[in-house]
Length: 252
Length: 50
Image (cartoon, rainbow over all chains, first blue to last red; front, side, top):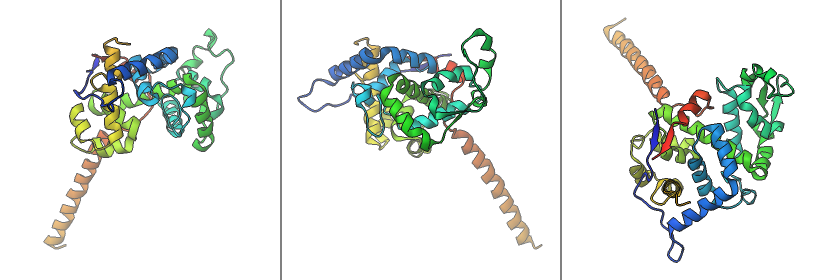
């Protein structure tokens, strides 16, 4: 079974002020920068999370505007513009999920071991064939996440200093949101995911989940959502000549 | 117990059951964000941009 996301998902195109280069040229330029700077990290995060590279590049393009990771130091840092608290929750949800083994979780742990408490010692030479059976044990048997208060400043520094970590945790968060929309509606709703990523799951619930917009198409959603930043985000990512469209057309 | 009291008890019981059913129905529809395991990731890998 395959899940198709049609791009462009709406006939809308992001409007740029007069005197600026066309939106299409801006989108191509930004995607080119993100790919040129961070393609290995995008591929690594895609392989780990299952989220297509094109979508990761698209989110990083909207969030960073093509800027380098270490320059994006506001309250939601990195090219994925992640709140450290959200990143902490993402790791916590991942650690506690049934079926997530220590072998699968280890790469996340290895990025930032100082925010974890060791419950049971991890074997030396973790990737040795001798430890193959241990790697199938639940991750939560071995690790516990420290409190959000302790972890957040460490996560924040890591997001800014290590684009590999920033891309990975952003990709895992997106994978969690994809899984939620598949559970909720049987389909991966990228427009819904954008609202959750950009405006939070609380506003997704109040503006989409509990309204008649849950089954609306992307254009109707953009017209009626009432969250300007998320409406713009959807059009930039999923609209005509958007960050996904220019990649799909192989213009970058 | 008078007939009116019996009716009140019966209606209250029916409303309680209906409320419980409604709660679980809507609760089921609103799934939390949770981690992804291999099964979830296998589904996500089926996503295609077309």
